[in-house]
Amino acid sequence: MTPIPDTLPYIHETRAVVVYGTKDDLFPAEMASRMKASSRLQVVAIPGANHGLEMERAEESLEILRELTVLYKDILLEAEHRP
Image (tube, rainbow, N blue to C red; front, side):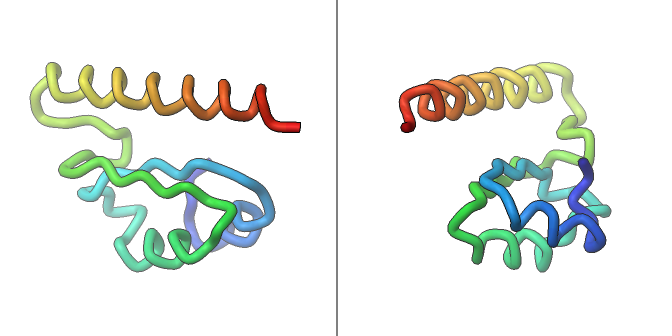
């Protein structure tokens, strides 16, 4: 789900991880700031990435995917141990 203004109320109703690229024209810094105010959301900025979380060099895009895989794995393991 692309966190555009119409979807923000739905995102704030749940625990979630929001990942965005700092060069994403559809996700301005102001929107990230509003989301960071929520204790239910974990907001992760990918410096220099676009809306698809891609970079100019393929190696950089692959590194983003690796980092996100680790992040998601940690989140899933944490959720598994939560009552």
